[in-house]
Image (cartoon, rainbow, N blue to C red):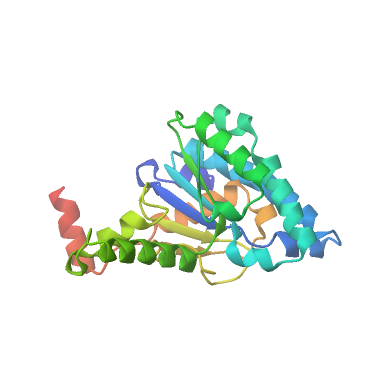
Amino acid sequence: MTTLEQLDPNRIPAHIAIIMDGNGRWAKARGLNRSLGHQAGVETVKIITEAASNLGVKYLTLYTFSTENWNRPTAEVAALMSLILTAMEEELFMKNNVRLRTIGDLKRLPEEVQTAIRKLEQHTAGNTGTTLVIALSYSSKWEITEAVRNIAARVANGETATGDIDEDTLNAEMSTAFMPDPDLLIRTGGEKRLSNYLLWQCAYSELYFCDTYWPDFNQEAFCQAILDYQKRERRFGKTSEQIVATQSEQ
């Protein structure tokens, strides 16, 4: 029985977030330029997007370019921006009924990239399958800071009372307000950290780390991560007995 066949179709995570790590190291191990690793990574994005769509994953959020990545060599940043444009293939989205959304400080992106993103978001807005969320020029600390700044402005203007601020208030200010928090966070490439990615949203996400570099991460590896997720018990602070009791009542 394949890993895909072992999956429980009724327990597919609604939202999977991925830190796509290892493109550069994949290229280095093969004596290639880092940009070729990123190109190979784009092909993996297509494979995993199609796999997520076929499995019925509602939201797939990919950490594509962080605010810290602006500190990389100018040539590499330029190559990454060019790849983002290349990856905006309409066929991938329309063939799989995938909708595109983006999160992050998009104002820092080149105008041509911003334009391409806006056009594809508009063109795929009516698609009803998986929503592919691309995190571009994104960092969680930036996002939380922006949310706090917006709430503080409302308080200063008398629109919101400090006593009324709660988790829902902050959730509503996040760039991810349109979707649920990730059920599963996958990080490839062997590192075991969140790297400033969806820190608020991943408070109760299941974390899955693997050594596979992103260009080698295929459908089988994706299904293995989901299978591992399905073997876990999500308690959200409760006991196992409470979870069982709640399930029996449903």
